[in-house]
Image 1 (cartoon, rainbow, N blue to C red):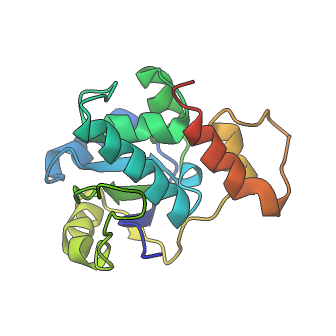
Image 2: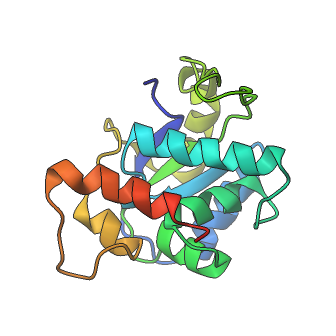
Length: 183
């Protein structure tokens, strides 16, 4: 599975003013296919690509609840139909020290299951634009890829505080949470 075009970032201090961070990001992002995602909400390459595929299906069928792909992706990741809840759960929040800069490719979907061609260069093709966003935000790139965590499931509302799921089932819990978004 190729890397999803997501870059982990570290803020020098916990976020105090999310509006300021989002404003700077929105000013410099190339379009609404770029977004900031909560660090623990990402989970894994598989989950990001799965949520992306669900987004692309909704875009093609003109069935998005949100008006823009970035907001719809946050909605899918957060597992809710409510956009305000999606931003609370999957967007950056006050106190966050880490996040992901995410690019949502607009590849064509295949006609049948398994026919969508994901470019192996999805990450590297967008690295320069991501680097520019990192510089404008004044953050540091993290040399990490997403991993499933109990913190992420708690933030997304899939677990109650202090609950946990065994490591071997965590990614499945994230995937199920996204799959049930419209039920």
